[in-house]
Length: 160
Image: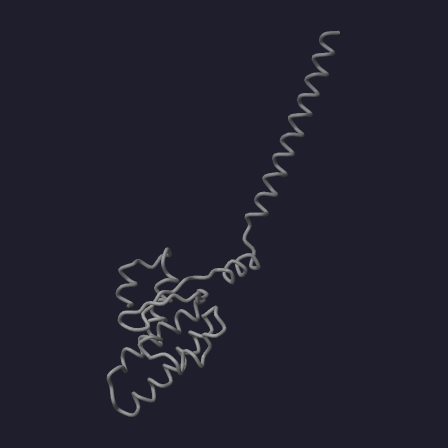
C-alpha cells in the first residue's frame, strides 16, 4: 500500500511540476510579447521623444525650446542646409545671396516643424529672429538630438 501511495504522490508531483513549467513558459511568452518591438510601438516612442534645445538668441542670452527629434531625413536635410549656409556666408554675389534666402526659408520651415510650441511657426522663425539665431537653434537641435547616441561629442563639436 505504501508503494501505491508513493506512486500516486509521484504522479501528483510530476503533474504539479508540469503545470508549473507550463505556467512559467506561458509567463515567459507573455513577457516576450510585451518586449517585442512593433512598428507601432517604435513609431509611438519616436513621436513621444521630445528634447530641450538650449541655444543663443544673442551673445549673452540663451533660451530653451521644447522640440521633437528630427527623423533621419530631416536630420540629413538640416545638416546639408547648415553646411550650404556656411559655404555661402559672407559672399555678396547675387547667386550666393539667392541661395542664402532659399536656405534660410527651408531652415525656418524645418525649425517650425520641429518646434513643439505652435507659436514658434514658420513666420516666427523666418521673420522674427536673425539668421544666426535660427542657425544656433538648428545646430543645437542636431547636437541635442544626437547626445547619448552613437555620434561622439568630438564629432558634434566638429559639426558646430
